[in-house]
Length: 72
Image (cartoon, rainbow, N blue to C red; front, side):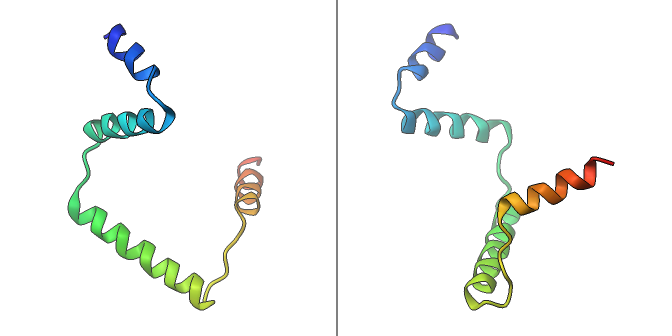
């Protein structure tokens, strides 16, 4: 096990990311139907952003609201 980890650590960053992603997928295998639904949601949301029917909220604003909510 230690040898495998050392070999993985010697890989370039991009290849380490691929190894990590592959290992994580074995822990949490995807369900095709669910993945397909998320793709539909993502495409719909992107279309809404591009059309201007919704406005993006910057991440720092979102996180500030979350932090304020949980400070109580």
